[in-house]
Length: 326
Image 1 (cartoon, rainbow, N blue to C red):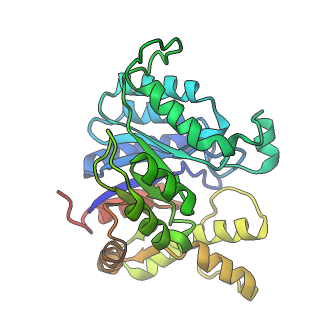
Image 2: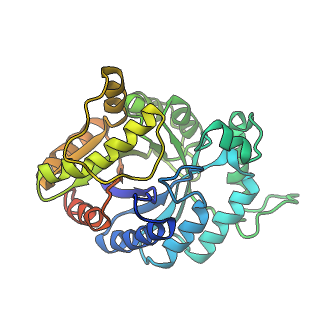
Image 3: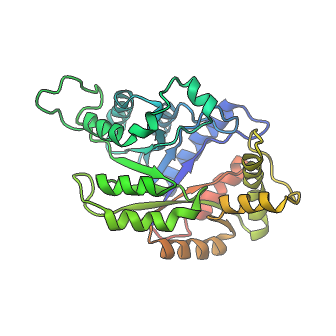
């Protein structure tokens, strides 16, 4: 099983955006050294704790400080953009870092409704997602007879596309188009198994992919002891509590003990974080091996919201030895 990294470029309390982005670049260097398969960034807007809104720009910086690891988006929220612009951006990345670029595509806006309106996008753009994916795929492919509009850079770059999802819709689309599929179980684990089933049962081979290829997301924090890992995990728990209760802010430091929550809030938080593996190396090894066996995932992409950068790097160093990779 392959291991990859989804980095949200978290901005911890007490650090500015520049510091967060420098931490992302340092983590990418370490991931390259440690043998991870991919290093992906995600598009989110108007979120104080996430610094990767200009996703293509950050991916370019990651590519410049790494040598081997695949780089890309997990993902670009295509309804926010013209397919032509994304083809040009990722065609540029492929020209700079040939054979290393992935383009994961999501249907959600990656933000709230008010911010989406500020992006000046048509509210019906999400309904056109399947058509936009195919238009983007064509722009990244070879020139067709009579084609007048070309993505330059981009044309004939054949940047591999992925479909991202947290419901059955993405699974159905990925299967129909014969594309690899990444499920966001790191924040929406409930539909993971039904989505994987639909994807595999309905998959149709394509020029890009001959057999289904599924990636599953997970929150993972590894530390020398279970107790320390659970302590570090409280930063992400606080973030999720804020999401559930409407709070906003940067990634907070860990705490010794969280305050008790109303049962309905606790239930939502537990559901959000249901696909999390936190502990020492052996604890996480057992959890991920079972997760891999239960899901049959070809790859696991790991998100790790740790307040202290050194502790986050250490977590990925320890994790690199958890699953033997080819």
